[in-house]
Structure formats: C-alpha cells, structure tokens
Length: 282
Ligand code: KIV
Image (cartoon, rainbow, N blue to C red; front, side, top):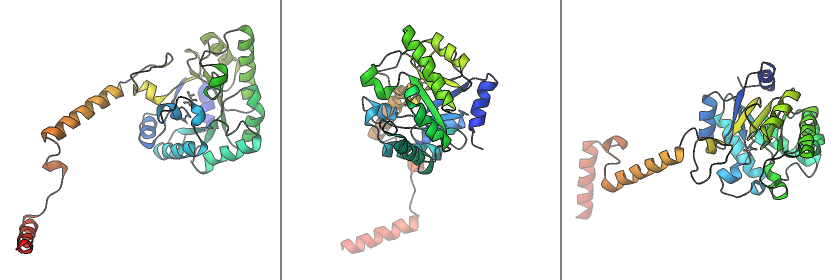
C-alpha cells in the first residue's frame, strides 16, 4: 500500500521525524523505496545533478514528466511528489492546474511541489480545492536564484517575519507539507512549532519535522562540489570510478568476460558449421 497524505500528517502529530529524498530515475527510486523512505521528491534539481545545467530554470514539463514516470515505476510504496518546473505554475492558475494534472495523470505522481509563499497561496488553494495535493517550498527557492541569490533566507527581522507569513500562507492554502530551504535553524524551529503540517528542512537545521537531501549529494556522486547543507553517507563516485577502472583493466588484459559470462554452441552444431564453411570456401 502506498503512503498516504494522512500518514505524512500523522508523523507530525506523533512527533515522529521522517526522511525524504529526491530520486530521478527507476533504479534509484527502487532503492530509496525499498529502504523505507516514505516520501520521494522528483526535484527539478535534476536539471543540475542529472542534466548538468547550472540552473533549474532550464528544466521543462516534458523532462519532469519523463523522470517522474520512471520514479513512480520504481517506487511501489513511497508517496511520489513531482516538482513543478520554472514557469509551469507562475503564469496563472489554469496553467498550474493543467501542468499539475499532468504529473498525476501522465506520470502517476500523487502530489506536486511548487516554490513560493504568500504569492503562491491562491495557486496552491486552487490545486488543493480540485484534489491535487501540494507541497510548498519557501526560504531559498532555486527557481528565483537569479533574483534572490544563492543564499540563506530570512536573516533580517523583516525577512524572518516574511518567512513566517509565507509558511502560514502555504499551510492556510491547504498544502500538506512545506520545504524550508536554507533557513536559519532558529527560524526553522519557530516555523515548525507554529505549523500543523510537517516542515521538511534542507539547510534549515535539525528541528524540522523531516529532512530532505538531494540523493546525489548524500550518496557522494559528486566529489568536486558538496553543498554545505549536505552530508555524504556514501562515496559512490569513488566506488564507480574504481569499478570502471577495474572493468577497463579486465577487458584490456582479457580476464573479462569468461565462459561463464557468455553462452556456447553445442559441439555438433560447431562441427557442422565448420564443415559447411569449409565446403563453402572450396
Ligand atoms: O529540486 C529539489 O531537489 C528540491 C529540494 C532541494 C527540496 O526542491
């Protein structure tokens, strides 16, 4: 049985912390799901960590649908959230509804996420009222990075107060959870205490109800850049490099493949084939 919104809200009610992770493809979703993570986000961060762009603004709806469908095929139990990409919801409620519906209908996601607080409240309400579960996302919102910079949000008194208002606006609009990205820990704690929906932190300290990490960060798929808010729980890039090196050496020296990795012809077939080829050559 797939995790429900009520179960996610139940975690908060019981004061039980829970993990969320991103996934962008079938095999990763399968592993994350099998490990018991109840919420998987198909983040538009895939623009950075899968497609190699330097911003999420290049990610399109078609790309998101393609990846979300693969994740849904891999995740049998986790609730899958599709991240609405840049300008798929900011231009109006109808566009937002149509695009959010694509995540559910074409990709099989159970919810969508969109960035923005008070400014997006009307859109969130429109989606929720029509039966589309929404996760909010406030603080640092990567789709606005050109405008707001890549930095911690809510440090000044006015900015902190605005973030509290944003959090309430998202909750009041009907979102079932809200991501707090790059928010000072004390502010994230305060918001977490005030909301009845779970807060999901990334670079927002230890006191959120949940934590989310970009899966490639926590698996150590990149060695050249590790964000400050990330922790590498594995070093897969090193493991992959070493596996590729060993494979290459094995091919070069002829120790791979062996008979075990292939199939063989029956002796009589081989003998007959050689005979026919000899006849053909004569
Ligand atoms: O796109 C993403 O991966 C996200 C998370 C960082 C919350 O929005």
